[in-house]
Image 1 (cartoon, one colour):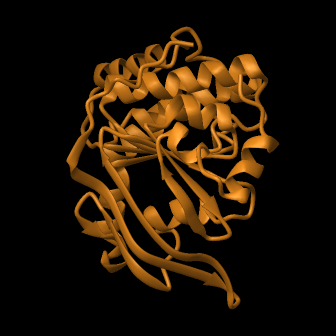
Image 2: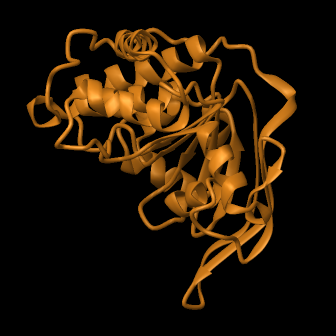
Image 3: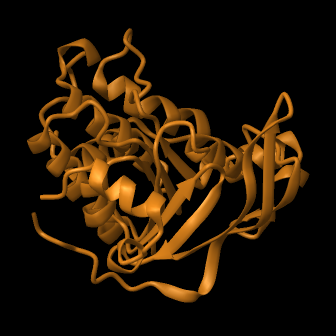
Length: 258
């Protein structure tokens, strides 16, 4: 797998800045004081087992959930203070790649990709829409699939189309929710390579939610290890897993690294 992580990262500019974030559900704490910065051009892999609060974190980032306490600044905006219209405008600048790809089964690939574009960008000509769709399909290596229905695609192809649909609005931030979940090792490697290619081509800053060590190691410029609602360690892959922390070592032993 080609490693593309020699990407220019601007450590003077945070696109996501989170300070003192707490979130509970029915008085059960899920996030217990999260501090987090994503720099412009950076990929951060948030690594942890199921139930550690990874998905809650990204839902708070896009304003689907409100924090109980703390400050969440995304692209210069305090998310929980935005009006509905302001939040919609912010979300256009954020691409969210869902775990299940979230494609419309009644639409073919072209229609799935054109839909968010025509909904959010007014007065586009048919040729402009065609160009945008073909460009993102080419970017994800599926230039010949525009007329296919989602049901005709493999799991890996559906993931690629889901990523293409987020890219069509040229987001500044990408959020990937378990991008390799349910995929075989070869297809997982292809998705990992695609995430790195997206970072390069589109100059995105990304949060990659995963429990897959191989994915985290090969996509994350930094790793944030989340355990029971707190970050145990944040740093490069080697820095994180050089820790003597028993939870960190246990997670490493639980996974298999190629």
